[in-house]
Length: 62
Image (cartoon, rainbow, N blue to C red; front, top):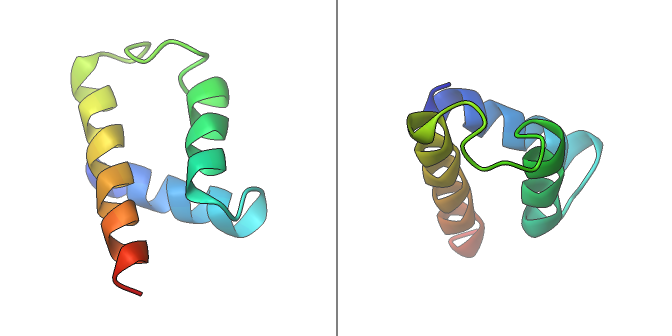
């Protein structure tokens, strides 16, 4: 999955379930990755982390 995919996924989770970034991260790790960081491969996990870092950066600047 791409960084853009995870950008959209984070926004969906933040809007509908968990309004706190760290809680959204935990939700996605548990439900999408099934508790295993590289469940869908290392590149997908790197893209997830890139999207998370991008989101954290944008919330700091808001």
